[in-house]
Structure formats: C-alpha cells, structure tokens
Image (cartoon, rainbow, N blue to C red; front, side, top):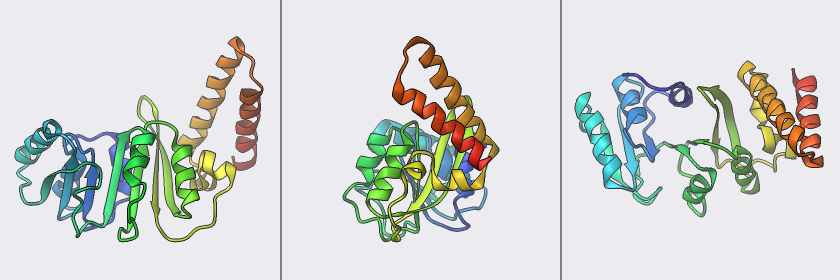
Length: 216
C-alpha cells in the first residue's frame, strides 16, 4: 500500500494499538495503512459526505479490512466513537480544522494530530490560548512544506510568540527539514520584497535569520 511522506510522518506519532479517528479521511489511506501494517487493530475513516465515504469503502474492500477500518459519516467530531484514543485532522485548512476542535471536550483523547495546509501558527495560537500542551512537531517536504503537530489537553502555560510562530519542538529539535523550511521562507519573503518593500516582511526576514543563527 503506497502512502505519502506526509501521512507516514503522521503515522510516526501513532503508537501500537491506539484507536484512531481520521477526520476527512477521503480514501481512508491513513486508517487502512495503520491496520494493514498491524499498527492499530481498529480505526475509523470519517467524512461528512457520502462520496468520500464510498472511496473509503473501496480502499477497505481492496485490502479486506472490514470490521477493522470502519467508515463513519460524521461532520467533524459529531459522530466520534467512545473507544477513540487519537484524533487525526489532516489535509485541510486551518480555519476548518480549528472549527472542528473548538468548543469540544477533547480531554478524553490521548492526543490530537493536526496537519493543516497553511497557517499552523494560528493553530498553535489556538492551542496556547486554551492552555493545551504541544507534545511533538515535524516539518515534511513533499513538493511542499507540511507542518504536523501533536497536542493534548494537559495544562501548559501560554507559549511565546516565537514558539507560536515556528513551534517549540521545531525550534528545539533542530531538524534539517525545518532548517530548509526556514531558508525557503527567507527566499520567499525576499522575492516579495524585491517588488514591494514592507517593514513587516523586513522584520520577518531578520527574525528568521536570527532563528537560524541561534538554533542552528
């Protein structure tokens, strides 16, 4: 079963026999991979539309994973099951992901794994504002830079502005892909500055260069 580097990195954060609820599962590749490779004995492939659930069922049929990968029609966490340990929200916008999590009782879950396509800093702000705890993070490159974070609802004091922007574990782990991501951002900002001078962007470039100097 082929699966993307992005999803493989998410799988790195899932422990043996945890029950996973994958929100917006589409083809159910993530939950199917987890069961097929005996990482999990049971997973849920959730989506809010029948069309994606039919695709999920095709994957489940193809690999004969009936009664182990369970398709669920659910608008976000609306129909989440009682035995779930881990929530995965991947491949969607930050605003949508946050709306799924807002005003929900997340205390019963061991962890929530989030991968949004952009604005991960806003997701970290949501976590910080709620005094949740970031457990781990990663940056993956696969034709694009993807940020992934893991958190739970254990109490944590507010994260600093720098941690919210770039991630406490990204800064601490000194990962090579994260370094390349920072350099990519510098190049992107400098290209914009060639056309439109901006004090904010100049400050951002200086900030990222200082991060590289300090942490790498």
